[in-house]
Length: 111
View 1 (cartoon, rainbow, N blue to C red):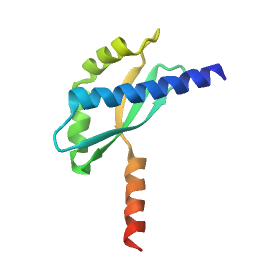
View 2: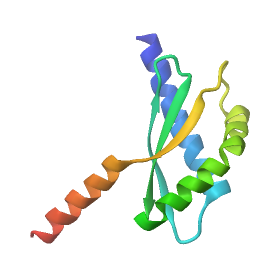
View 3: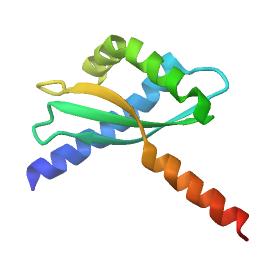
View 4: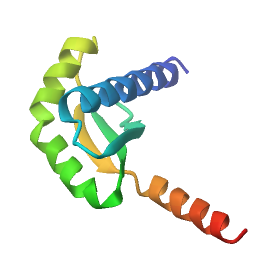
């Protein structure tokens, strides 16, 4: 139970710090990038950070920028996230968010 709470707190903090980093250091023009969720491996050795990008056409560009800034992000996390062993971070597009948006659009248009 304690590990679950620790993991949940870590996920919440990683989500906030990743959003701050993207806004401060990446911030591609004319793009809205949202950190939608974070998944941590059981031992907290790996963290997948899922993002949603609008417009969708800019998603590959933003993911590329994040990949290039991976070392900077790691240093930012070391500075702001006090943890014994820092997880390895991987940024992914959140396909679930895109599907949700399509469903919302279909429902909106069917009214």
